[in-house]
Image (cartoon, rainbow, N blue to C red; front, side):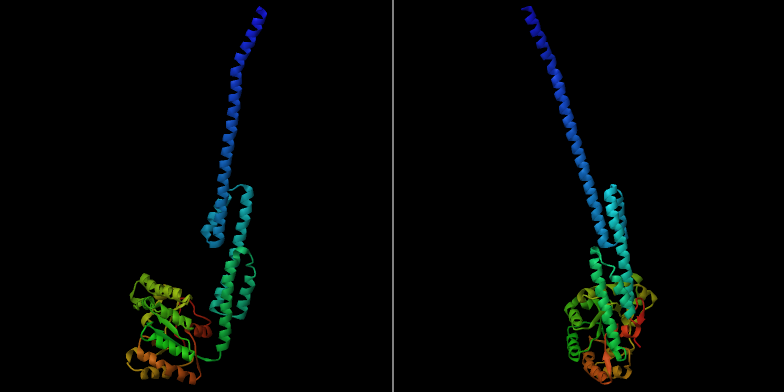
Length: 363
């Protein structure tokens, strides 16, 4: 009996001692599982953080692809260099392609921009050959834009050949548009199938945007005559630039074209004025002095007396008598064998195109 009791007592003691040991084991297991879960969470956060880091680098690379800006390229390179070798090497290959892509585009642009000044068949062929290298998907937009520029250069070359041996003359009209007189002038130009160049004031273009659009839509050229017709040489360089460029921006927006000309009010300019813009200044060789008169006869007489091959004729579409003089001027000069062209076309044929910071008078 005593032995049985002793064995039961020992068994009970073992059970009692086993409980804390079991608890310790359970606690240890729980802590181990908790540590594992915590470690996995940290790894998952690190994985997500790195994934976002890779995404940020890819976005920076894509931005650089589209902008081609040096600062964007440098920013993308810095982000890429922080990545692990696998991703870093993959994205750096893309950056190397981007640098090559930009170099190809710059070469094509240089050729085409050169051709926009002096158009030659060989120059256009060189630009076309260079465009063939822009075959990467990310170069598609640049390729289409430059291809469009080549087509423009080809049209200019064809026009130059067509007009090479003709007597050319350009009608220009300043200070408009005016709702009282410009519509009548546009009707005459349309009926006579004659293009003209309108040097419009920005303030007038702002008031009568539909007339600017109509001038352009009928095949005429529209360019800046500054915003308020101030004498540019009396202004500060900043104000000179504002006068020229504000009108130019508005007119380009209304016409959807990028005309590279402007006419300084009163024909007044100096080197400082020319330095404020990349546009070419255009004055005139034949002044009808239409602002002096109140009838069309002396305006017609002045135009016909001084007209010559390569001339740029100055008139104003804000005077009724000037507008009334235009049909006679056109018909009589046509009878003398003249072909009417815009100023840009005239300069294309005579000078191979207008150059920035230069002033042109015609011949």
